[in-house]
Length: 397
Image (cartoon, rainbow, N blue to C red; front, top):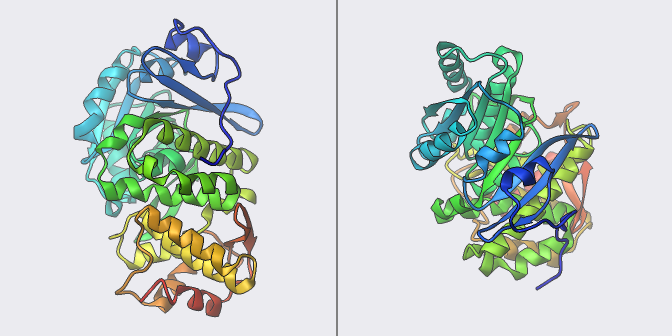
């Protein structure tokens, strides 16, 4: 196994320490007889902002929430029709232990419902149940639920608190962290949104076992991206440990989720509102989002990000920043995690045209994320339509 950065606790504590005592003391690693909890603190403008808690069940959620000192209020779990039947009642029962009244709002699952219309429905439910500025939303679901709930929280009564309880791998390692919220507008992805930081991100690794194989694998698009843009050693570890990870080996999953969360934490702490470094997280996203739209959201987000990364890697080879062998190694890594390497039924020029409406445009130019080398990304504002066209030739057939 390739050695990678691993998180070391700041302090070891007694196995008899309660979860509440642990949480009141800050973010440590606690090893009990039953499980291992890991916690990462995310800072905003140099100050502690919220914790990412990585657990093996929902049993620690009430204790984590109690740290926020929110009691005697109303909490609304916002979830979708896929996740709600699986976990809403369990999360509701756990949160009721905090001394708050807990409501559940469920909307129809799917990217096609990540819209302002659904946000209006959430507003109406909150208004009818008399939620005020001191109440809190709980995003229980994947990236669609997290983005939509966060945007609802950012805009309802000019902003109320929310927490993230992500249930997909992609949401756990990416969209739940960093405070980006938003919805799609007339099929243009995430065009309406706001930066609004959660008060807590609580991850239950056991929920990953309920995901379909394809949905689970989709999360690896963002995970492999983290290695490609920031950490070559981690990227190599993902290659070496693919079989253990796909077999849901607990130790491998825990390490992977921790390292990916920590990479994203470092980036969003340095650049919370995407004025510079945070844009590197968009590697594969400019053309990936365009492919996602042109495919009418029939592919998962992670699958489209991989297709966008393949195109970006093709540009890197053309520019000479990486070798053809390095590009092919990345393609083999995507294949290890069972990603498609091309799509059919759409046109290259349509994808390029849609990319010009991407929210990451800057003064009429596409901010393209490319690699100087594996593990080191940069922003290029000079990529032409012809370069994108050549890069997409093998991706769109």
